[in-house]
Length: 115
Length: 112
Image 1 (cartoon, rainbow over the protein chains, first blue to last red):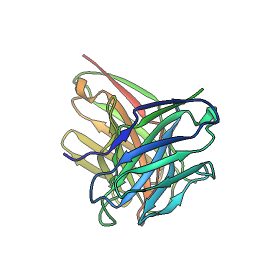
Image 2 (image 1 turned 60 degrees about the vertical axis):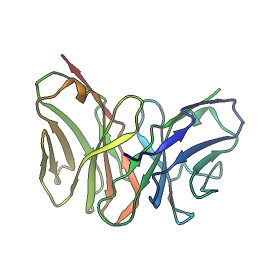
Image 3 (image 1 turned 45 degrees about the vertical axis):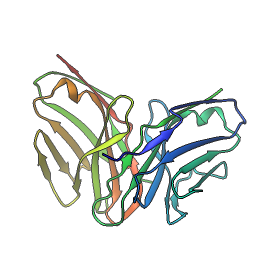
């Protein structure tokens, strides 16, 4: 069964460094999402992406964050100048299309630790 | 923005029923979802209900929606140890699947 994959599974970085989190969506899925979950807190929506542009973003998704799909396969989340409070689990999710209920398919997540 | 709240933990014995509760704030038409997350895996959709329904049953799973109180529950009959996982409640607007709101997840522990 096709699945969403994410790399790396765990990333440790120093405060102020840039990180890139990678996601490989299920092929022929058209809608892509990033979420994060700080330990013990809610899964928070960050951004949705369709047709090579951002569809919607939350207040969390400020200029520190960016997304792109550089090669038509990987979907990346870049976090510039990481802060301690960026430490969280980051989930990628994808969805096939507009029709039907908005079922999303999630990857296993990348745990980001900022020291 | 919309808010989704869940209790953090639930512990039951194998064979008992589990009831996981969720409250939400959106008053417009909406889809409500239950996702399951097993250790090391992503969230997986279990079931969903549209806000014009009161109940939905799917094998051992029963979803109840009290729209007046904005309360959603997931009942798992005959709970098994394999049901141990984190269960997330989520909602989206019926015509906007660009944005979803999740709770913090309820960790279900099933004791043998």
